[in-house]
Amino acid sequence: MSCPVGVDVALAARLLREGKLVSFATETVYGLGANALDVNAVARVFAVKNRPHFDPLIVHIADRSWLPRLVASWPEAAERLAARFWPGPLTLVLPKTELVPDLVTSGLPSVAVRMPAHPLALELLRLADVPVAAPSANLFGQLSPTCAEHVAERLGDQIDYLLDGGPCSVGVESTVLLLESDRAVLLRPGGVPLEEIESVISPVALPSRETTSDQAAALSPGMLPQHYAPRTPLVIVEDLSRVTAPARCGLLILQPHPAASRFAAVEVLSANGDLTAAAANFFAALRRLDAAHVEQIVTMPFPNHGLGRALNDRLTRAAH
Ligand code: AMP
Ligand code: MG
Picture 1: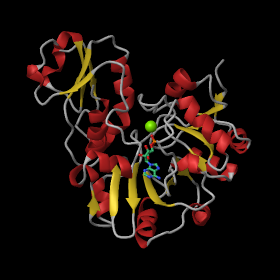
Picture 2 (picture 1 turned 60 degrees about the horizontal axis):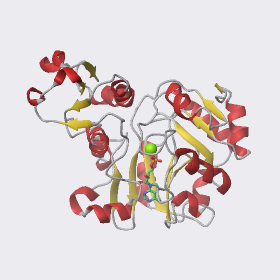
Picture 3 (picture 1 turned 90 degrees about the vertical axis):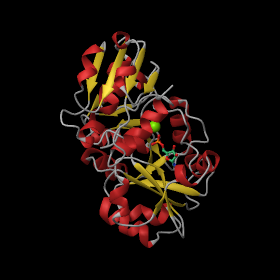
Picture 4 (picture 1 turned 180 degrees about the horizontal axis):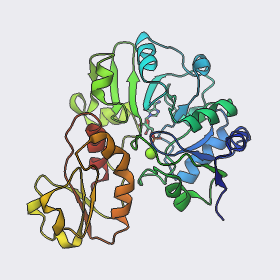
């Protein structure tokens, strides 16, 4: 049996307060939300997603009044970033207070907080009047949902309500930034491009460049090399003309390409190569290719700037 789907924010908020699971639209992807202060509800989020307990959850708030209860320090960099990007797709990782259950942070001394920009999400969080722990509303490791139908397909029978806010406007997960006393570290590229963050605070350290993958994993345990993956094998190539059997492959491509007609199924993410539009279409396009009965999904790297950095990160983790 599938859960109720709709726009009844008051009902969704009441369910969250009662310890139930509500999937809701944000501007990034659909979240699977639970009251972050209710460990039983949070435990159900991990169980429903089949998410390993070492992978911490992001806590969502609608206004800053919750911050002093959730984070133990609020450095000037956090203030400047929040002033510029909240509400929006930027998650800040800061030292946590005792109030935040260890289950939410996977035992880490820090908590990830974000204020989403989707009006329905904000209304839900305001009415629920609790911080909401919410990972993406998909099974662990699979493609993130960017519309209500994606959630209903896979998780409809395991959640208590699905708050339908239409397709997600950003389409990739939030940027996750760790703020330590002396440095900022980009844990996950996402909806706010690195260049924009660096226009507010600089420099930002990139773990991929400066640390080993073990150290990067210690900083952000959820950043697994394989994630966000379709069931169909996905490969990233530099040159489409070298794909040996395009007639059996699907193609995911930023903009129209002369070699595309040789492929069995094609998803062009943006007619003019716009990376913001491409991000908004990315997960839905991958899902369609995954359902197209092709042997392999072929794709090319995105330009590594703006939202292209987040898209390349997702592609690399989707490749297998
Ligand atoms: P998701 O729920 O899929 O959007 O993933 C959230 C990601 O944020 C996790 O996989 C972690 O990599 C990162 N994250 C959340 N909380 C923390 C934290 N306290 N410290 C470091 N990274 C975190
Ligand atoms: Mg996720």
